[in-house]
Length: 490
Image (cartoon, rainbow, N blue to C red; front, top):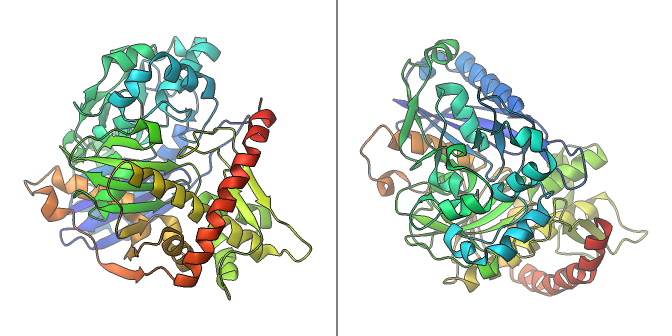
């Protein structure tokens, strides 16, 4: 048997084909970009995701036709919090409102003020990127569309709908809506009511390792897949990434360095800490949870500079890595999309501070990468304040390919960082594992182990000291500019 994992990210869709020995038999990636039609807005046409998925499946069908015929199950992963709004014919009413969209900041603030007790139930205080405040914004600003709304799905669940005709979601993606009772693992009637949403507008819940549908015959025939192949519930990208590297036991930690960034620590119990902006969410496996610091910026900062300079991000990274000796004079606040943990500041923006006549392109790149590493220092402090200290940390996502970034993160955090073979496919690989669990009786602990280690990076004493001194300047710069950020977007 083989298993297929599909991850719907912010900037690309990834599909991986895995055999019973967890060897990757094929992989396909299709890129796309969100649109930003207004300040604070971030949107994507769900049809772009569907086209990317079909393109990726078509590529795998051409490259590995025999392996595709042996696929027993398909699992999904995807960006969390994004809202796909469907009418009564399951058609998108408008572009999806993404996780890094901040237009609903006033609605999030209103929810926090009116329903402070709900934060401990749904895992975190409401923030602009979550699904709940977006729906309140929609009712107020696009009432004609809200009147036609029949169902709200996350991106991965919309893609599963395209393959199966079933509208379902898993606990970990539901956790990111601000509507899930995290401890009871069921929709919170009170949170739905607070958001003006009827319970008929949200899909039925399932555990991520549960089968929730079967592949439609016409889809199976189109891509050379078996008719009736099982489709699993899957998981949000944070949870699926954790499953991909075996971060399912209490205390296991990972950093997912994609367009956005998460620091995640697995737990066997629900431990909310909303006052620290730590997300306490249901995991994609039964009776498991995790604590997460979620940052809206990560490898996207390097992609931004690539667009600005007209160069591929990998070329910029190689240029920055030459003779790297630690933080220079240039400081970057990488808040291109605002920031969640620890600031909950949708108005925050990217800043380069300390320019001089000697500043060159490599300085910009190094400063941006250092800025992302320093956001992880804030993330570590928030998560550790709510639980035990973090030990060794796994690193996955597109940014994990960079040895320079790995060095920076290890030294900034003062923690050993572990990278894995094919680590950039983490969430898609985790989705394939969830697909496998939906077809077998395996214990999750037996399957969800760490994959082959690519390398281990230890903190470098000189860099540890340099980043320790830079962290406070980084924080002071944000504090000084926070009033200006708010004034600029008022």
